[in-house]
Length: 462
Image 1 (cartoon, rainbow, N blue to C red):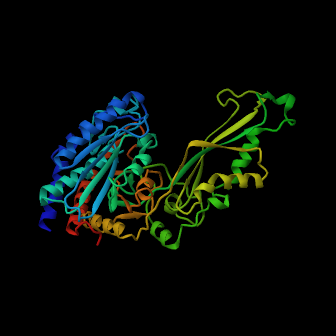
Image 2: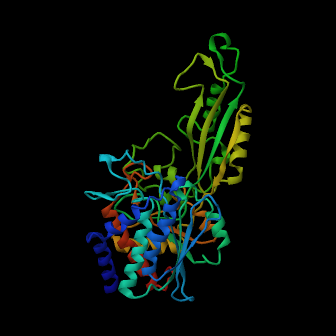
Image 3: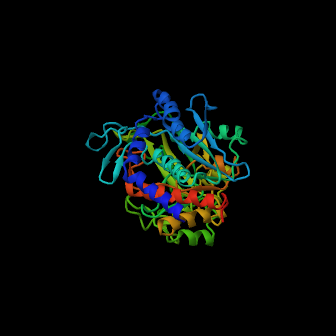
């Protein structure tokens, strides 16, 4: 264990010496905003100048590919093969970030200049996702430096379009199944449940966005002359929406109530902490007999994202001719994905709302995924993280949000292990995005320990 401890001490030194900040600052400075068409060169540069040099020092061979979607940014693959007989780990990251939102950060901070304030490092990509794959690559290097070899093979995919829905990624993965063949995915994205406790999750909730519309007539009509004579589309739509859940948000569409919250999953989730660093959780919302963790990780949730009829900014004394609601269902494994919208249509028709039309979004369904939490890889990861951190890791069947896990779990048929290195209060996707230095230090120690343990076990979960 002496060499393992040496590697862990070197992981701490990477943080305390300031090298972590130097390395992260170099990546943050690349303005890889995938939502901006003019940032295409920056997406290319992130892979060729930001990541490829790191991989070269670790003995990886690297290829940067044109995305199958001609409008999307490039995709990097890399591999370090020690022995074909050894198991292979596939990892993933995304180098793109959301709009930097310049001018909205505290004290006028530049989102693409890493800035330290106490134990926080501010900058776009510090939490999502640059710091996360930087930590994992650094941990691999620390194991190599301490032991001279990994004891397993590594393949890597870094895309540059995750923040705009990962266009082309699934097609690329499907066309490169041999190149990316592996035994397990180990990657990092999202937040820990608590900053000081490692988290493992093995999939994500799915999501589908759609619209509900009631279009009764062209234009609006005077409410004095026509009130009581014309059907009100906003009223009809409001009642239709109210039929989808009850007054506390409990889903009323039978097919939207999943069958996967088993006693085992329920027991795993029931006492886990949620919502730290965010708004106060409503105790009287959602399923009555579920804990907060069960509701967000083990159940489906319906949300009205936007609702409009008439001109809300300047209300007129008129009955609108139409009404529209932008809606979303977040769903877990155990929901019949192809039947989500058809079952909603049946529900609306059965409740007398045939006038309500469903408008499908072009993006379609983001699939739900989940690995059995008792899978040997999940148990191995949790055990290793616990041994390094000194606390039992939180283990989730899936993240509450969505990540493109299905391209690995379904297209490549891999067990998927995600170990996040951020926390829920990181201001991800907002001004003032930041990472906590203590979380980063714990994360690089944990990943160094995990990769060390994989090499000791010849890359097999034991």
